[in-house]
Length: 232
Image (tube, rainbow, N blue to C red; front, side, top):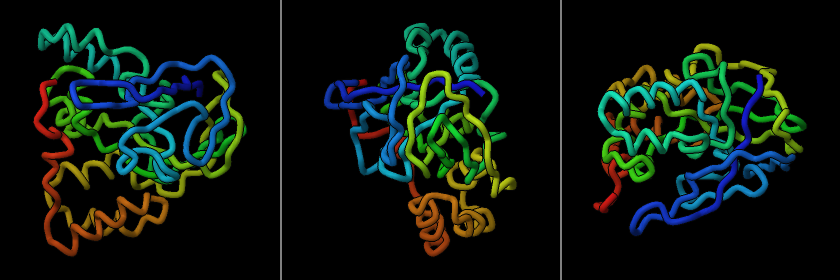
């Protein structure tokens, strides 16, 4: 499976908001390190980047869906922003979506070995990126979030490096199911217990699932999804 490699640097996204969400396709070989692709940056490092969130994959199949949705809503300015890398992804291709990719999947990408660690948690910067105040909510609700990966083995990757599935230790936990348990089902105790028991899931997601179980409720996602009051 062929994928596009993308990187980006921090820049102003909206008044008072800096972000590296605007990624651009790369045409040369890069080193894929434990913390991500050479030449890529993250801004809010509390929520982005690090060994468990080194890479972001976003399925290319979703772009036509969003384009059709924006057109149907008459949001032409938002539609024009649907260019490769618009969702902040480092990897994108056709043939793998949240329904078919599973937590813990291990892939060979060039000389690197990478593993799916968690679904992507959409945030308010998507709203600023696309000029639609509730876009992050739509992305979360329909499960077209993409996913994050850790780097198990560092190595050189190129624009022609195929993404090859090597292992699937958790076939019963597709990325979409994990995201639905955490975000879209209210308090799903059975599902949360399953997440806690998946060692391939990122430590932060396992802890959050355990915290929800202990509290008997899930978090209020308003701040993450809608952010501080700002003129987007």
